[in-house]
Amino acid sequence: MENIDMSEVQKLESDLRKNILPPDKIVSLLQLKSSDTVADIGCGSGYFTLELAVAVNEGKVYAIEISQDLLDYVQEKLYKKSIKNAVLKLAGEGKLPLEERSITYGVVMLVLHEVSDKRRFLEEIERVIALEGRVAILEWIKDASRVRTPLEDEIEADSFEERIAAEEVDFEMKTLGFSLMVSHEVSELFYLHIYKKVK
Image (cartoon, rainbow, N blue to C red; front, side):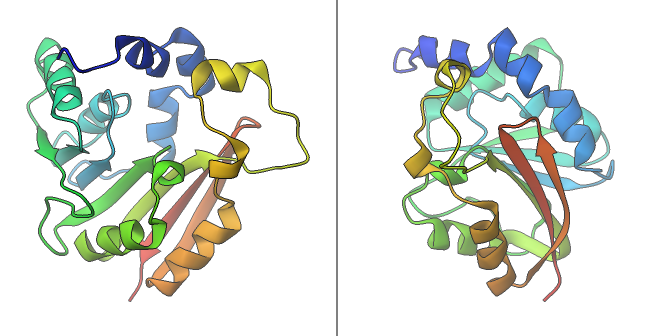
């Protein structure tokens, strides 16, 4: 794992981040079924992966990343917790390593703002989601009127320009056949929108 920037991993898994974005609380908001087949798209350090796997103990979680080093890191975490219902998948450019309509729940946690071609990315997610399946998107709230806080710099080094407004995500998802089921504000920093594939 020599290519991993461990300072970035430590930032992703810091106590501060866990206080603001507790993985167990966020996963509980998803209302997963124990039998769901989940895709943790852009799983990173596995911040949510372990909680997802516990929640779908009769199902499966595909942890998807473009970095093999990060997947190796996640594998170590899964091994230490004796979690056996998570499968690691290395993604290529613009392509999810999943079969069409094979996923009942897609999870995209603080990933979308980092994607350059968001439309293509969302289309690929649509390809793998089963009819009546759901997609949860967690993102930074985009509010240009609010001054960026040092706290935000400490937990993730994005910029306001990279952020994507909830209304924009809602529009794109609607054009892809998804209906907004529920929305949450997670502290004053994040929104969580859950969509259902209706056509």
